[in-house]
Image (cartoon, rainbow, N blue to C red; front, side, top):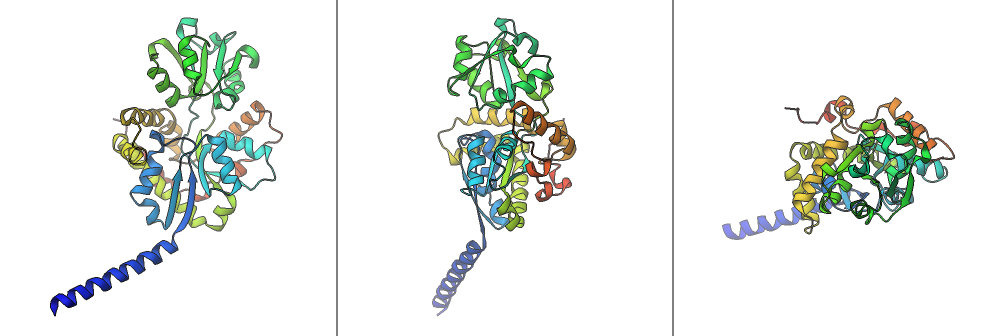
Length: 346
């Protein structure tokens, strides 16, 4: 009798558990999230938030997909194929200026406080400073942030726009061309091109490395973006997404080595050591900055954002200049005290 009662109770609990789970899943808000690139080290906090259930705790059913570039992520969010995504804030400025009648999209959390765009130059070509780039040949794909924003870098360092010759190159060949000596310098994301160059046998001692933020370029980098319509209809979902991500980012900053496990779980073919290094370079060069430590992760400085929008508009020759409110909405951010997530510097 007792065994029968126990079995019946267990069955009832299982049925109730299934029912409650069904109700819970039905109540979750689905969010399709588009990354800017493949599953690599910097995608760790997004994947951690999924696997540890941080999004689910906020009532969200989040699907994180790999991407093929910032422009693609922005276009897919604008088209409605994705509710949220991860893309270059400068590419967002360009999109808004060139598509004034398109559905609104906004940055809601800056992840790369400084643009990772960087010049990598061969020392054996006599390049030790930006001024030494005059008369040299640079290679990059035309959609590369460094290529697009070259005018900003040039002006900040006393160079004319046309001081260099550009070669439009395939992104997969960019570093190879520099290693072979076919170009004098390239532009690329710091944590991508540096690792690619090292993988092709070219070390730091052979390079002059000029990160844009360290050479007078105040541009922001990648941010979490959201469909304006989705955010207005589901403000709690966007707020919950940012809380969950912020939580995962704090843990990623504290333990990058451990965070890579979530990238490896999504793509078992990655080189864990390489992607751990890529994540650490992204943190050191673009995420953990003095401004981010002062303002809290995710936030923007209004004056700096206004300046960077104008710089992009001028450099890209945009037909209009979006306002700061069009580009970024800070109302969904967690409170500042919750965004002071950077580990103490020893």
